[in-house]
Length: 247
Image (tube, rainbow, N blue to C red; front, side):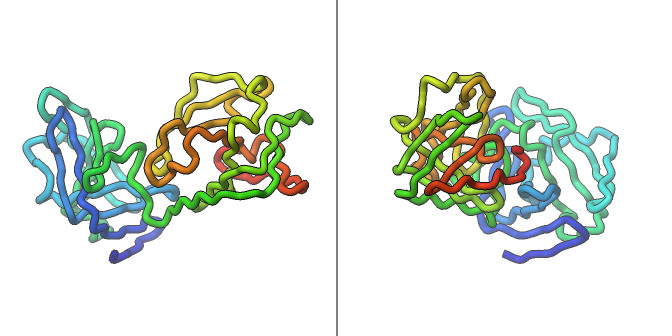
């Protein structure tokens, strides 16, 4: 991958084939996508204009300005029977030369995204985010307000770039009588769809992936707890609560 930077925006080329759909039709299909870090946490895809179905783009006549990317032309995307207002942007005169001649689409406005032939959810995958899941015999105990809610020597520890280690525990080692399911559902492009529980009356302190994505299958059906919001003891030592966006 070739990388470039301007200000706080990072741009890289990816060799993956990337497609996005709207109204049951392919709107853009490329093997020359750019990954652009518009926000610090994850990248977004930019498609060469030559690999976009230009018939689906309708200029709105409005503009949008970015301090780093310049002035954008705003498009509504119309495909099949579907229409997504203001869902595409192009920066023809951007100070970032790499993104000139490219179009980016609002992720949530589109019907589906694919990297090669695998559907991707939430946002483009960051090539610098890695997920490692390792079995561990370390003694892990989870405590909420002085009450032990889990005690295990069969944890699987999930190490994800930029986040604290997460301890996924067998349900047989968790006080399920203290857990109450909530209606919260979240999605992760690396792990899949999670369901949540309140713990001892405190909402959404625990979660699980029933059917995780292939790279995270080793945590299927296990329960994890927010290190940031409760106390976790590992081999008898209480870990310091980390400060993250989930704190």
